[in-house]
Length: 365
Image 1 (cartoon, one colour):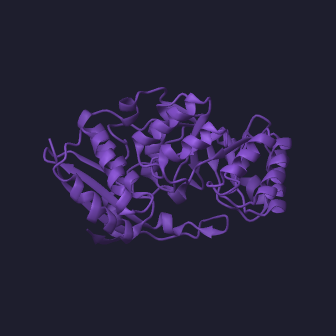
Image 2 (cartoon, helix red, strand yellow):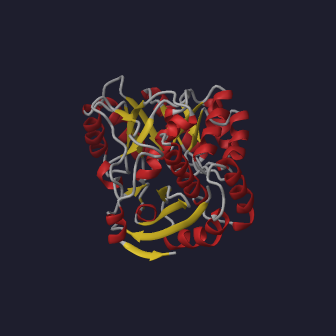
Image 3 (cartoon, one colour):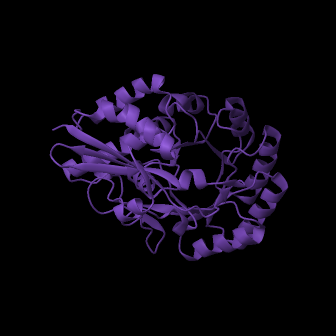
């Protein structure tokens, strides 16, 4: 068996003004590549990129496509190693290798007629879910949304705050006072603070009993993260955006610069590599809490990895859910008890809605 063709379709869907930390998400949710990897026996693996648009499409066409043609799709690790090595001089967008790898895993699962979590080794078939907010305009708006998802039996709620310590503490206080004590709360600052601000807010959050404190600093600030883990009892989650995958996270983990490791198949070069990061975290007694994306197929990829790991507590569901459910036959399903359940079917178990993609198509490469 060999890879016979790689099809790259770029589409531009309408944006809706969604913001995190006051910044538009449109570059990640509107300009997208639909990637298909096709074998000479008619098997097709596919996924959607996290943003990238025409630039990502051209990178995939000029680098990934020619190196995949003629390869045996069963040799996933060998193909990944070649992509990793060649990417040193491709200087590609961060998400490119992960996009290609997820499509290859979808292809492999379909060839084997198995869901990806079974190929990885299933630990469970459902996982508790927390709702992960956008940046809202007031404490009252955060409270209203948190209560909505508490009523839907989600297991927690994460505030993507503004990066203004006074406003952020006000919002977090309001949400903690309004929700049940057993409803887990987290905060993601999206690298919005300096070290002094992070320490101040972290102390306030641990007084309120928040479950974790995520990305208070830029993820490259190893010394700052080590300071926070030493001075705060609340768990610090970091490494979400670091390039370098497993290698970039090894020093953070070994030097105890974070309590929770973050990674995902889009940011960290695919499904297999994210699974390896989970093993690294487990070896040091830490959780890998897998970052989700505003993209329904990368959500599915993240869920499959989470279902294969013993040291992952939650699935992260961005909300409002309708903003991020697009271009697929059916997104990841959250059941009535607030669990994300394994998709049915082989591979990702989520398929591209080609009518939707073709409606907004701007190029084929």
